[in-house]
Image 1: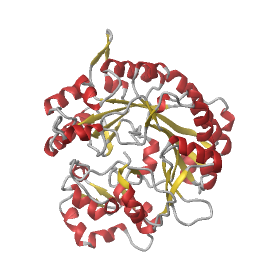
Image 2: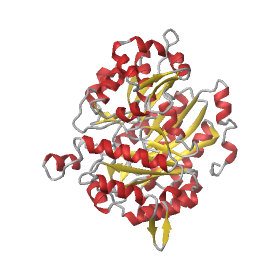
Image 3: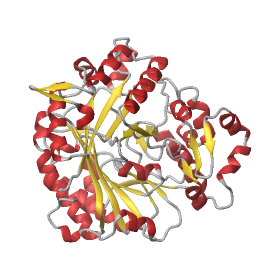
Length: 481
């Protein structure tokens, strides 16, 4: 149930009603860009500041959300995700005001999932109750590792004990709605260490009590392999030889062992990096993977939606710098820095790349909505795909096109030095081909990570125009579920 102050603002639409009627829905991503410190591996759009103007940020977030929602065709918002940065550093009243504003100006489905990323420090764990009262009904805890040396290498600002305390508090406040994030493949981590860490998920001591983490986070868990991004502290440490990352073979073995371990503990791998019990999927990310529209609000946020009066979906990126973004929002109601119209061809390619990351793949219905004149089965006629169907890596049946279990393992294998132009990542044949060479595919191929502030004026007409500014796909569990 959504715990906002004014329940009468909520829409009467439920998910089943939305699916059964011609109601245009969207999700909302809200980016809080501030952190207390930058993790060694992080290249996301985040800023270290000890003097955040919370009132000004709140006003601008509300204003931009209202503007962009009005520009979209959305009749209902089915989920809201607060990511960052470290959104749990925001004042709970900021998010409450935004939730209520969206509910007033638009509509929130009465069963809307409203998630927030949480950094498990003692201070932020203490505030969880306030965030629940503000309207948050699901949290993703960025534990990352249960090893103290791993936390130090990753530059995290919390201890293992603080993680456990936060998980315990969250499980009480958000039963069945607590997700845990773990990173594997960090420098110095061995297979034995990883196996031990997975076993720790089953039983760890919290003060004098036994905390069975897989019972605390009993419905959702996300696993991410560490990637070393250029420009990060970790990249410099690796380049200088101070640290050495796990080789590709070890990383693959770690992932496969984790998949087996989680399945033995009742978790279903429903997406390459995400595991759930009893169908407790992250609804916000499900919308991404199903090709749904989403509106990005806040500095550096990304969105994909079809504006009112237009026939093409647009990829949008908001201004990166918080100060510049706030000035733009105050002047014109939003801080959109770039708009890229997406061709039908690009949308089909995105659907393939993102959809194959899930256990369901791409349904015939989803494909036909974009491409009514050519069926999914036509892909089997192309030489580039035949070998993958023949080897059982890809499957097609009455439900649609999907990767087999073995195919899912291969598609998301990661190698640090693999480099492919971003525009090639759209294409399925590149996706499958390079995955066999251990190409990393981000969990959200629809969203980019921008390396630097886009030039002004920014005249972008195609993805190729934007490609020089893009360095990697944006991985929301960091907003991940």
